[in-house]
Amino acid sequence: MFVEMGPAAPMSAIAKRLGVSQPALSQRFGSKRQLLLRAFVPRNLPAWLARLEAGPDDRPIEAQLREVAVQAMAVLAEAVPAMITLRLAGLELLGGAGGAPLPHVHVRKLVTAFFARCSKRGLLRTSAAAGDVATVFIGALQAQVLSDYVEGHQPSARSVRRHAHAVVDLVLHGAAAEGD
Image 1 (cartoon, helix red, strand yellow):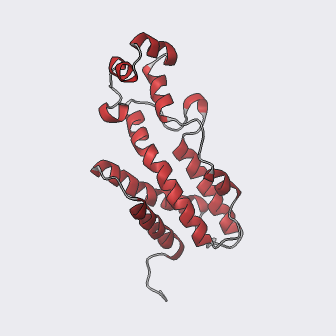
Image 2 (cartoon, rainbow, N blue to C red):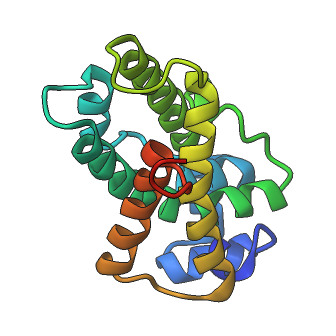
Image 3 (cartoon, rainbow, N blue to C red):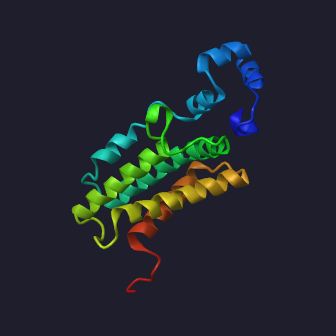
């Protein structure tokens, strides 16, 4: 309901949709702020983040980045509406409930560390700072997710994969013609 109606969604309407009384909802969560955080800040991060944190592995870097890009877009597809709603509610987005990092912040940190390890292993140019590469990488993925959300599009798995692969290609090889 927060995504549908924004952060001003009445607690009474939320309680009604959930089939509980408004006092029961208020007692369970304490405040609308706490309900917003519980609704939009997941408790567990996806399992693939552990592989990202441990990587890079021995597979070609392009294959690893394609996997990361597709999976990151799935996290971002859930995070974008949540972050917009939380921001509209005036809530700080840099820390989550209880100070735990929000998913998009955690993913950005892990991707930055992944790129730093890739650079150290000689898998990426060392002239680009890992944080800058991560920002370009995540930003390009996030831009598509945000565009889809704003335009009301439900991207297919195929279009997500196509965009994720294009971002990886641009990050790894740039847009210059061969030999430039």
